Length: 427
Picture 1 (cartoon, rainbow, N blue to C red):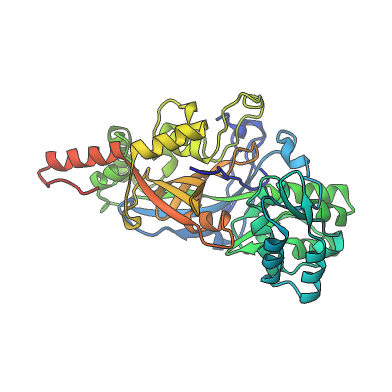
Picture 2 (picture 1 turned 90 degrees about the horizontal axis):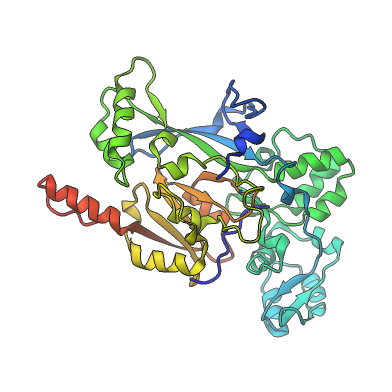
């Protein structure tokens, strides 16, 4: 299956809601989950939208920002050092050709080409730019170079670059009071892939911020992830049987039907958070972070995107999915390829860079997936749009996306079609 990149922003089943998870909600909320639990802030109405209608019904979406508590997640307090750019298995000619095709100014290209030297640790080559040279990179040049550096885990700052699924720096830094010099430094160091912002040069940014309090505020903001609250709107015309067929995937129709029917029968507003309609594995984890105390040992199972995706329907967690070979065997034996226009709840999306599997996620509805971006303690389980996910992991070349469905789900649908006398469903 190739390397498991599955790396998220700075680096996320124990529920950290109980331990001070700060939740910046994109609508006005006035509730608290447990003492000191969820903190809410109002933001503008552009954070609310309606999902694309489909067999899942009509969805209402409210964007939120979630951040890990810094006193519990040490990764956000450890800033990767070093300014060496490693190009493992490259030679001088290949790197020089790469730089020659870059958007760097000609004089800067020549400086960097002159700095190419052997890298004994990786068997490739490396460049050691100065602080001023890094700061002076244009957004286009930074993206061009850093997207390649992020391929290699030895470049920790680039492989685990902080990222935020929006093109708005103001949105990422919402609520943070930045000095003019700090804001200027941040704007120079941030780069974009599509509508996703990235920041790899945290040490340089921190050197530019003189206030310790401001440094802590910025670090915490960098750990934010953009996700969403999703509600299913039900009205008197809603087809509860059809909604049950969709949301009851995984042999769970008897679990979701009573709730959907009761929502339809109630007076007034009829909405239900889709979390209540999802499998146990998702209900227990979405919007939360891994328990650093429970999973801190080296023997702990990596809870990455693949572990998350393959456990989606499991009532009991299968930790063997932390093993790359088991992941490969499961996907090859238990899933079948489907068309992208036929996605349903529980379908598996694989993101590949060439032949290398770098990420996976599970389809929910309306182009939204359930995902965990990396093994880090500061990576939460959350919902994202497919388009944001592709940019989250985007490199200089578009990623290939495969769409798969569990064979068990396909067999169940075919069996149901036979019983209904409607023939055999094709997938």
